Every structure is written in structure tokens, then in C-alpha cells.
Image (spheres, helix red, strand yellow):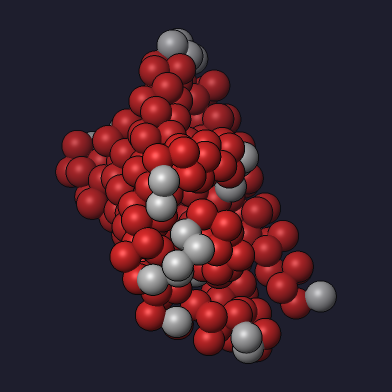
Length: 204
């Protein structure tokens, strides 16, 4: 893989990362209470991306993509998981401002798992490597695919971490506690809505 190909691929990954998705919404929601939680989502999502790249390298993603039933199952599980997260956030949002330090620390620890599971239950990430990798790594050996996975993971982490810090800084400027609660409610509703859309699309 040439340097030009790597940079071009990194640019494509950045463009795809900027497009709002489940991981971005998770980062935004958790960053409202604590920016480090949003960063941990970024770490988990990046790890999930590396897992999908490894799956492509070993041929697992190709096996899954060749069986529409398995792809549908992953979509359904991903949708259900997002709906669950969204409803959970809606239930916690009114009390978020009064959350104590222990609860916030626990949220940070679970944020990594949220990012990882959200990415692993998104078969589009695996299909991305299957469809795009041949254009940037013609040899398609394990090393080349993992290199693409590392690039994608780094780009995703940098963007999501930036998003987390920016969101946390923005919410701190909201003097009204009620405004912060409304923002948390809206973000939780958005996560649940995306999960519902994933469910509808996978079952239609």
C-alpha cells in the first residue's frame, strides 16, 4: 500500500466518520455528563473496527455477508441494542444532573463496552472493509487489511474523541439545568429512534 493510498483511505474514513451514526450519538450523549465517557466510547468503537478488519482478514465477514439471514440477525440485534440504550438514557436523563461521582465513574467504565458492542453489531463496518479494501490493498493479504483497519480505527478515534471534548465544552456553557436535561432527553430519543429505524429496515 502506497502512502497516497493510505492518505486517500484515511480521508474516506474521516468523511464516513463525520456522517452522524450510532457511535456519534453515543459519544454525544455520554459526553454531556463526562467527556471521558465519550472518549471511552471512541476507544470501544475503534476496537470494534479492528475486530471487523480482523474478521475480514480471516474471511469471517465474507462468510457472514454471503448469508443474508446472519446479516439480518446482526442488524436486528444492533437495532434492539440501540433502542435499549436510548430508552435507558431517556429514563436516566431527568436525574443525570444529580448523578454522583461513583455513578459517573461506572458510566465511564461501561462506555467502552457500549462503543465496542455498537460497532460489532453493525455489519456495515465489515461490509465496508469487504467492498472498499480491494481498492486500497489489491493484494488483500491479512497484513494489508489490518493496516486499513488500524487507519480506520485511528481516524474514528480521533474524530469521536474530538466530538466528545467539543460536546462537553458546549454543554458546560448551558447555564440552565433544565436545558441540559432537555438536551439529554433529545439525545436519548435520537439513539432510540436510530435503533428503531435499523429494526424497521432490517425487517422490511
